[in-house]
Amino acid sequence: MIYVSENQLSQVEYLLAQSMNGHHVLFDLDLIRNAVGDSPKELSQVEIKTIEKQIETLISKPTLMHKRLYLETLAPETMRRLIRVYFNIVENNIFEKAEELH
Image (cartoon, rainbow, N blue to C red; front, side, top):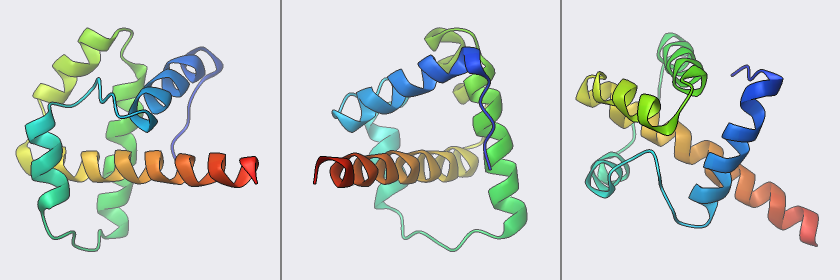
């Protein structure tokens, strides 16, 4: 589970809303293509916990620029996993919003 403070909530909502509208402000388009184009493998519980911590660290960065700089420090495979998990979160939010409209 990913924990978000009250102060970080508006940033997270902004990032998710942007991504839900197709504006991926955190990730370069080529990185996204690379990550989602891969055949996803099932992540172990340890890998999931690691990615959750990395997302929490990402969220804790104060500005969009700091978030992008943090992402640049990640290894390519870690970045692909993080992007997949991020877009899984975005997808889940889209489904939740769609259910609210019905």
